Image: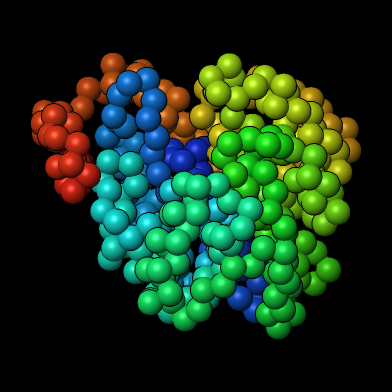
Length: 325
């Protein structure tokens, strides 16, 4: 879009769990959800290729944090912000890594006191206690609007992380407006699966939307099929109304994600709109890894050094980076 540039830095289509995106206008650089993670799957630790993708993602986030004035945390799941503890198994995080990202920045966050579940309230408080010592400012921005020269940054009120009444709590969405155009970043709304998130997106009428798709890989395992189907239906409605939709995240943990997008692709095409994944927006090849973990272990056996690291105690693994080429 004229005046608004968006570059995906870390997403499932790029090999990791994340929705980290760098957004830039002539006024300001904004780093959305500066976190990245790997996740448990198929009773196996992540494959070395996943750790290589995680390391590259960390490098990109660090690089673009230097170009950002503002960093946003839409909620407190570890793939959406960088905590200040050491964990090389799932996060490749440390106090130094967190400090490098947030130091000297304006950090706008989901309120950790209101509309939040217990685990995220604790994480949010710990994050705030750390980041307030290194950032220029930290502010809860639920439902707020910030003017940055000719750029308007508008945050939604809290909307469900998935379906209404779900156990995963709430997130805030962010809209960046410049020159009469608008990009909306809708993290972890899963489709959206909730009517309140859907209404909030439609009310903004964005020109482009970056959204997390429904977690089809969890169908029947903690997520009701009805919630997933609602998310897919709502996504199709958005594809009919929004000129460009970038869908990724939970949806692309499903190896067969494309088979679920028929109605959304048809809605986009019949209205002259586009539906793409984050790697396409970034101009990179698709790199699904987590959903192929067992296959990767079979086709590309890890080195003996990696297997020795995998045999360490859980605490030793957390403190020790995995050996990579």
